[in-house]
Length: 97
Image (cartoon, rainbow, N blue to C red; front, side, top):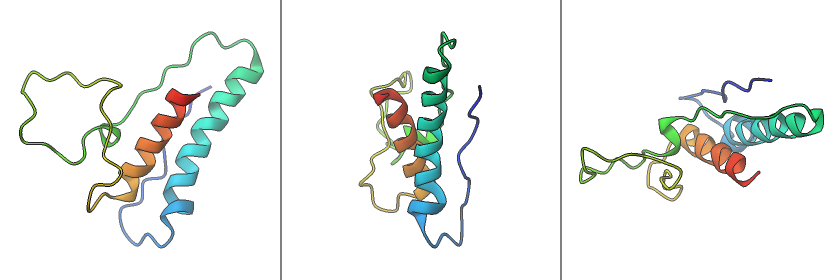
């Protein structure tokens, strides 16, 4: 089973919760639930997005910084695009699963 993407809408967003966030988070949960219910899935690989870790961009990050599960986009950052929020919340949902 493969869950490859979230809705990618950059403009004319009228309802970020229903257009971006809910489909991303619920889609991730549905895939993980289906894998669990199948009973035959041994491993799930989640390929993340830089949108989940890199906002706001910090000019002071060391050049040799390795990003891992400890890094998250700041959901309270001013000007955060709903797509970045959706990707962050979807990945957090996967880690919490």
